[in-house]
Amino acid sequence: MHRISRKHRRVGSFAAAAAAACALAFAGTATQASAGGVEEAAAYQVSVGADAVPKHAVTGYWQNFDNGATVQKLADVQDAYDIIAVAFADATGTPGQVKFNLDSAGLGGYTVEQFKADIKAKQAAGKSVILSVGGEKGTVAVNDAASAAAFADSVYAEMQEYGFDGVDIDLENGLNSTYMSQALKSLAAKAPGLVITMAPQTIDMQSPQNEYFKTALNIKDILTVVNMQYYNSGSMLGCDGKVYSQGTVDFLTGLACIQLENGLDPSQVGIGTPASPNAAGGGYVEPSVVNAALDCLAKGTSCGSFKPSKTYPGIRGAMTWSTNWDAAAGSSWSGTVGPHVHGLP
Image (cartoon, rainbow, N blue to C red):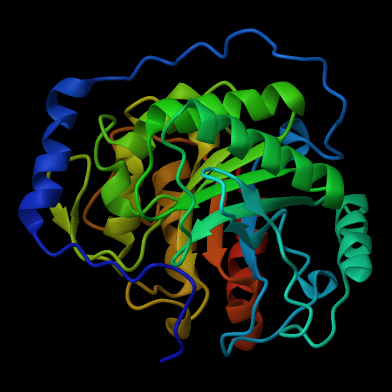
């Protein structure tokens, strides 16, 4: 199997998942943190912005490297994707600071000038192009005020340099909610209307007491969508306290319910799945299963054994890793899930 640029992390102990989820019994709906005052007048306006993201949106990660999937230029990304997350920004020697380095050699001589032009073309077509931070090998750490400032300043600089519309948080090696929230609020003050997405692992969203979940709630007023990774996970608890196995419709709906019932708006919840069996170590589902889960959550139809007590017609949509693996599989994921997401009520 090709190695993927996402962390292969299985939950080794069900007890850990159960302990994390126990907080659901008493946590309730978390309180949204105040965004605070505007730090400075914005010198840069993103070209699309969160308000321009479709009501129901499809997110896809574009690989800035060759790992055996189809190598794409940004212009090659399938039209079904509304938000394209460029994977990934690199850590520098300064804590919290990130830098994007286009892998021109690995992408067949793709130049920075071509990349920037392709970003503008995608934006002209109504797409958002954002910079993803983290991934399997990501070592970005935002753990104090200095690193939070470095993160915000450096992401803002990359937005100015390339024209990115925002940032995706895909930190798979720990996250500090206090300082990541601080960093993202600072960034939003610099670039109002930016798109902010997050891609936590399942264990990170089992309880609103978890750091990732707390971050999402802290920035709820500026957050676009959380596209949790429903893969490389193992079994987890759903919002009904029952155990569900990855690779099933119940896993998608039962875990999405935790976010939907603990503070996030339905428009801030998306379902993230692999584009092909080769794209992840486990948890692949057929695109039709993604559609069934979306219908279950939005309309109360096509559910498995778990059926939510109410519907969430505003659910944002779906995400996949990656547009490249999607292309390698004949674009089956985007061709099936894309039209379905865009046709939700």
